[in-house]
Length: 73
Image 1 (cartoon, rainbow, N blue to C red):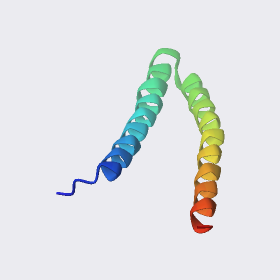
Image 2 (cartoon, rainbow, N blue to C red; image 1 turned 60 degrees about the vertical axis):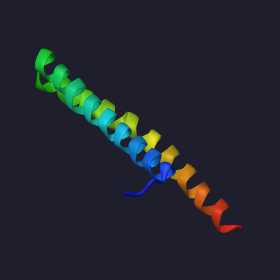
Image 3 (cartoon, one colour; image 1 turned 90 degrees about the vertical axis):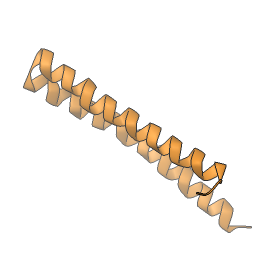
Image 4 (spheres, rainbow, N blue to C red; image 1 turned 180 degrees about the vertical axis):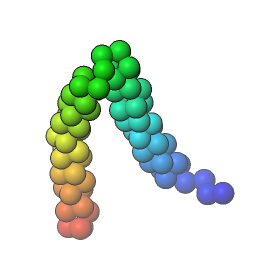
């Protein structure tokens, strides 16, 4: 077993983010669907996906900037 704490931290953060997204999409949208019906559940899913797109774009451009900076050294 490796004792690399940076890798452990990175893996833990990725797991927490995926867990949060699963909770929001499954539990959050599931509750909307359960209480308000199919149309509201679909609208909630579209809104969640629409909100996720800008967040993923920001993460992508930060990752890209990190690659550029690392390759310049």
